[in-house]
Length: 448
Image (tube, rainbow, N blue to C red; front, side, top):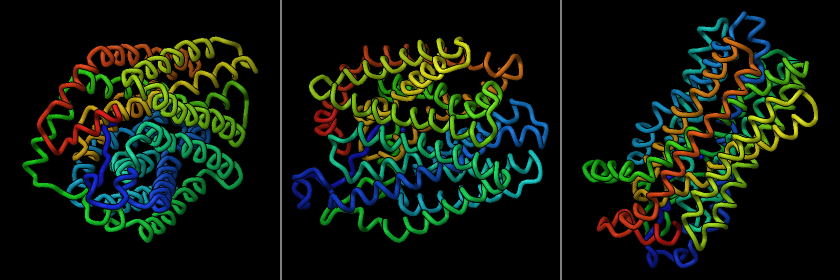
């Protein structure tokens, strides 16, 4: 889950423009469903590893730091490569880029299934990350380009929540398959699912059908010089930089929970692999519900007062800090699980508001590249270091001790959002008063 791309023709150039739908509603929702499905596959392939942590730890005698690295290397590659790959997608075609990405991560996941050592598994996970690098930013750009602007934060939160739901399926199904058939079959199932879904997507979704009659989309490549002139606007204000930083830091907390909750339940609640994965899956599902909820709350509260998006993000961030700090200091049992669930609900609720903030503060004509910038921040500040740092802390003390420290990252995220809120109205006014027609400032005013 971010700058936004409301791709589509200028009102008046196609019959759907007056209703705010660049393409037919039915086709828009079909594209959303298939794109959401690919995102599920993306995260199922990424997170199935966490379900089999106990099996890999015992079979290959791995430390928690090495386990965390296998998880983090995917997010690291996503962070490093999402920007250049999304830039290429903006220029050469988003649909083709999405299909290539899906095939690559699925084949790489099948490679993980036949790994004979930690090093081979690491290489497989590396290629999973390369395949997934372009998907998050380009996928959301495709989805939002064919929906009305008023659904921006809600759809962004829902789409980003696909990561959490995919993690639920990856951890839950992966744990069950691993317990009954072995951990290799868990990877194999995820890889096959991704390939099948990619084939369906390639048949149904095309660049031609995404382009409104008589119009053009932001996915069409523009002159290289023009794109270079717009790139500095990705970092043109204090508030947009604050949104990048705050979003990334907050996802450090959510990523740590998604990676290590299966192991936490295995070690501290004495659950077998399948049950630990299923239980962790429930909590990861709660994280996804929080992502959607954050987007919905943000859209509703900010209709009249756009600056409230920042207050929503601040509230979710501080709430997760308080609840998670309390949860991991309680004894194991029902009360701890209840408080942990509440903290998990808030831990990634900033995703939708942060996406809308970035969307309103950057030009629409470089949508995929702008989403890539947010993905870059989310990956390098949160998703990549979260599991690895938590694993390293666990080796130094215990997994419980590490999870007691992780929520403190939310305090830094809150500070970033506070800074962004302070400068937001000034920066938005500067953007909307600019002369660049490609930024389509009137859209920023309506959806800020």
